[in-house]
Image (tube, rainbow, N blue to C red; front, side, top):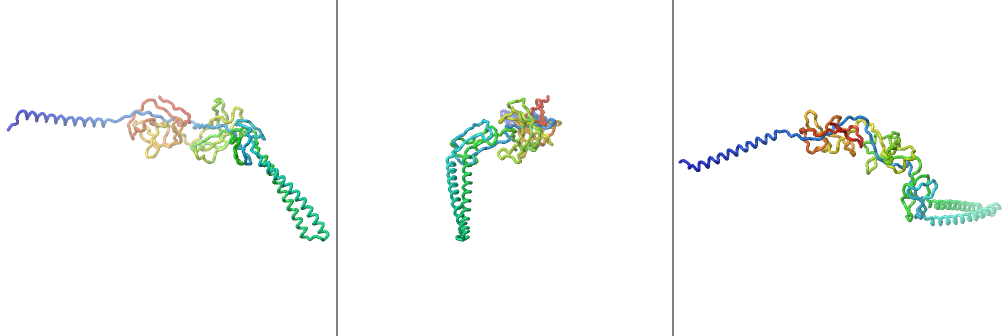
Length: 385
């Protein structure tokens, strides 16, 4: 039985709509395949590693100080009653710096003097007894034992007198130790105790920077300490006088690193110059005679991969990036110093490393910045157009 005309029209319309839906799905799939096939090219900024050039220049800041600094303290215990100097005062050898209460030590002197007086009277008494025993023994009235006993008593009295004499001298020395005097001429660099404080023997009370040779103390990290040797010639500049530059010499390199900072103390001797004052800020300039030159990259170029430090290097021919593991020497104000993994001429992605993947197609945008391979901590990059 033939279908009504209205029913046939409805079926025809439904078939057309289904056909259109299938065509739309096919076209959308083709469009996605076309988009996936199109390669992604990401614009990047890069830096170029330059030639090593001359030896790397090192500079470290330090403070001018006296080669000899004496931490002076009393040789006896007591309460400080007077302080006669302040920080910055110039003192000469023998100048009085401070006093402590000497009352007890004065009493000790009087007691020791009384003991010595009594001992001397005892020596006189035993001397008379011995002389009398010798006379009686000569007359055969006293025995040898009596003479020996008198002699022994006299010898003991002499020994007691000598001990009392030494005790008196010691007590007098204790009194002189209640005054703190400068051993050498110099400048008072620090005061560690004040009037009213009770100090023990040997407790530092004042620090005196002795006149004479001055030096600069700098802290050098372990990556550079091998470049510093005793006798090495360096240059010393000063923040307060930009035109003052002196020839210095490394005097001492610490044999072990300091625990908090893990740096090595290096002392640089300076020539005698009246313009150099204690406490001035100095900069030590030295050349690092490295067998392998340090290269510099921006901090933003670093990435982490498999627990190691890497950078992304652009292949000039294929214009793709590949990760490369590097060895970091240290961090500076201008970037990161690298001692392994890079060579002159490498193009390193300077920013956006989180978007990089292996063999990603890139396009270099902007100017190429050339980083010197022998850069120091204040070196600037060069723009290559």
